[in-house]
Image 1 (cartoon, rainbow, N blue to C red):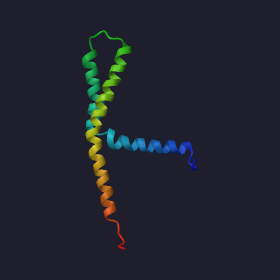
Image 2: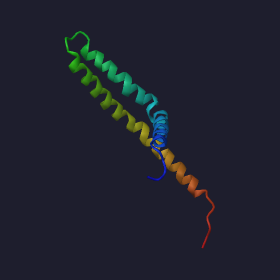
Image 3: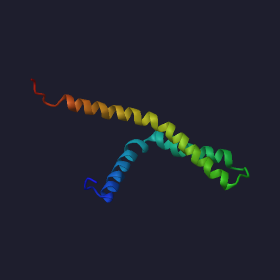
Amino acid sequence: MNGVSILDELKRSWAITLKDIKIYYLRPPALMFGILFPIALFFTFTVGRNISNNRLIPLLAAQTVFWASSSIGPVAIPMAEIFAFNQVAQVGSLPMKCC
């Protein structure tokens, strides 16, 4: 390998995970549609029905994945464009040498 230990790689991965959570997943649309909406739908369709836990857990997991993945797009795409624009602006402001 290139001298980087697995522990260092795990630390870096954890830092990126925390950054992504702060930037993308803790936004109001992602929280609303990723957590609250699936739970509300889950209770709407399951309260008062005699359904086994073997069917309830996959139902909640599927709704959470579906709504969370569909709600992160409108949050992540504009953020990615903002970051890309800032990088272009930074590169454009660097001193350039002609010829």
